[in-house]
Length: 279
Image (cartoon, rainbow, N blue to C red; front, side, top):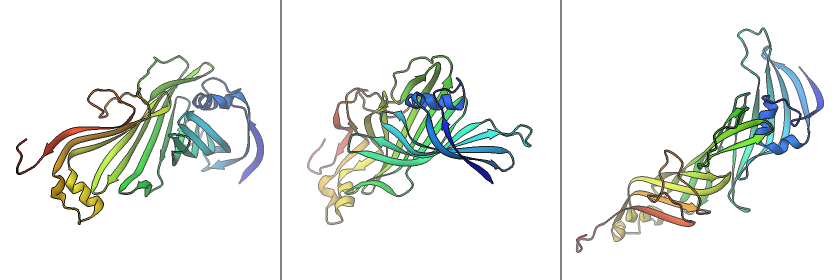
């Protein structure tokens, strides 16, 4: 049983430290006007009152747009047994990772906003998201973690991190995006670097040793003789940088120089076998 109403969610008038003010920190443009929503009030499991609303979109950073949002406000009921957790916003939504005006990834997922923190989590719904010949990018996972405070956190210009502000409320965020990649018979992983909210570089790593002849044979077919290209790479790293300003996130592999040059690049240790050549 529930009560259906029409309401206006005034994010801009929210008191500092409230759930709505934290939502405005994530996207400050939400605080510039009211959000008119259709919603209903209901009592769930005898312990919480749920307010449900729809929001068209939230711009997390310039490269991440969360859209088609269903927001649930879960409010604890005093005196419930066992005690209810604190109030929170739960969001079901789609997230678009925008590489350029024509290239993007679309993920789905769930997010939670509390009075002190927020976790946004999105992934592919299953199967292969992008396939180009024998290259498959799949199992993509995106996470954005926020910590909210009333004082400005220390500035951090590192990749995949940043600070946003609305009024006297601050949010420090960390972005993580990784994916599994299959190229022929070779499985590898990749991660995405964000700089100042924009996509900076896509980094692919292949651990161990990769034989080029065997790789080509798995892509082209058994008709290709693997011994023709008896070249092996170890610890192969390939990246594409949209610009030259990216830096490697802490704990992730990156180019030995520590610098990303715009365009496609690769580096690895090489071993060449030739029965008539000593290397």
